[in-house]
Length: 168
Image 1 (cartoon, rainbow, N blue to C red):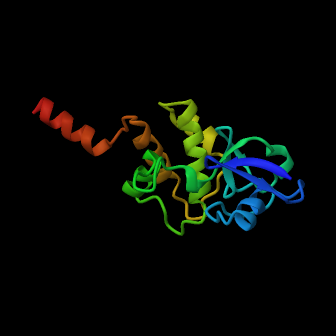
Image 2: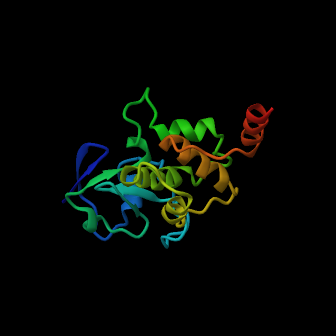
């Protein structure tokens, strides 16, 4: 029997300890927000948090997370009626297209903001480099992360308008 805590709830599982965490989450616990993409930790669709750190659940055996705190996309929001700031920013910036990579993208972004409240473009690149978006929404993802962090973004149109207003 392996004990883990998932989204704040302790679970005792009778599962082969070599089973990848992804399949435990999806098949045993019916938490299907975490996606299977590649099975080799290359795409990021399976990203979850273990003790607050982003990990790839497709290559992490259950035994490696025994006794640990696991957060999935289903547990990211503080409550059912209050989305996580990143989830709100994702909606505001219209990030999702096909949506398949979004749970992994959100989990990687949340791990970044938990350790770096004001990330630079380089910080975002580093944190998100293992997450692939086949729809190419990288610009919107970056904008949503900065929005959730409250980081001011440069907008050339607003800068030109401000210059015109200030210099008449």
